[in-house]
Image (cartoon, rainbow, N blue to C red):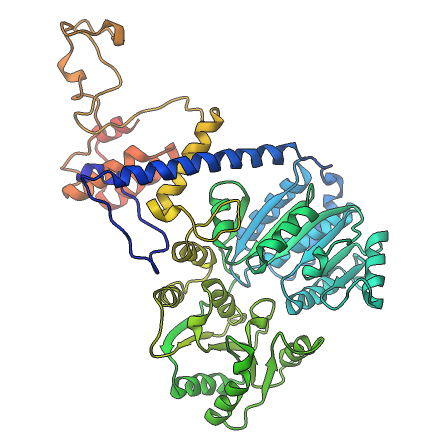
Length: 579
């Protein structure tokens, strides 16, 4: 590829961790055929996307009353912290969705663990309840549902100034149980204004009374069948989805514009990035991690992949550090034992919480700043990221140990662990989801498959082709450009062809005898940065390509500002070309 055509290159992203990339021959026809197959699939998909757009536009509901916003502001003032800039942006966007639009909201809020997604949800929930409609907060686990219930009760419950009636419905509260019948009756009559619970809320026959909003927390933990039930429940209802690491399909839907998306990237003040250590598991590493945390009177999470490994891990920890008080929590404990164990540990009791992924969501203990994950190669990327987010909830330095066996790692497991070692910055949840997209594949956008056609041409090119197909089918979804300057490479033609008399000629006036002005045929209107301003040939060609691809004046201004910082003031000739 010539340097001046470098802008045509894009990074290949797909499931390259597990499948070797198959290259096409330069002179062969396979690349063109692959692109044609993908193009056909994007056209079919674009039709489905546009049908989905059309269905969404036909759905209407009465907007929430703007006259009640002062009441919502009263609740907002009870938030004990100063909202981050991204949080403020989310608050405003969701208010616009709920109050000023007739189409039901369908918004994904992607934010790092501990970055304030829950407060975004609480304000939306209270707006719904204040408007006389029922609201539901759906969580994937009983532990997370219990934590949400306590938090919502403290902020909005009967003992608060807002006096909202709140109910909790989780597994074990079936329609034939005494508690289950009572809660269902409260839901049916509207006595329960806000319901917090697990997938039990998706069961058939839940008698919602004027349901106005469904908030889905940790969307990536729900299966395809559960999401189909969510679609049935929320037909015509506002939906707010929260996730730190959306699954590849959800991320792809967001990137393609099917779902509205807001991102919270700004961290809370004083928050420190968690230090991630990926190592082969040894007793010395575990002992050092325990000693460091216990020496500062902290507590430790120790996570194993399977319940049957709990007893073995208990013996292992006692052998390394005799006298440890170990609290155990996993999903196979009876009744509420897992929630009670977590609550006991949260109160500062015990040294180590030995658990499975039951603590992946909803466990927020500022005194725990070290997590040790045994056999980290057995977990998915999203789970690893969520587990790491269980620590670092205070201003102390937190540590996450991703320990793996010496041998037997698959290529995908290696890629996941490498991603955790590389993506350590605060607010990297969206980046983790994008890396998961590479490792697992983009998937079927509107179906349930998790691996898709994108790997044939790479995710970047696939998304460009999909967006182009959507624009093509819409026909009218092209931006209006009142004033345009096309920056062409040298000797690749110009926008105007003039005759010797200076008159602009159209195609019908051109023939082999037409006398043209020499400078106007590919020699006068091309875009070029002078060598005196940018001496390096490769850099100059790259920057020329970036300028040609600039899709807006703003992008061009940002680009020229970068030039000024690096190369100094721009010559007047270059300024004129860019006007």
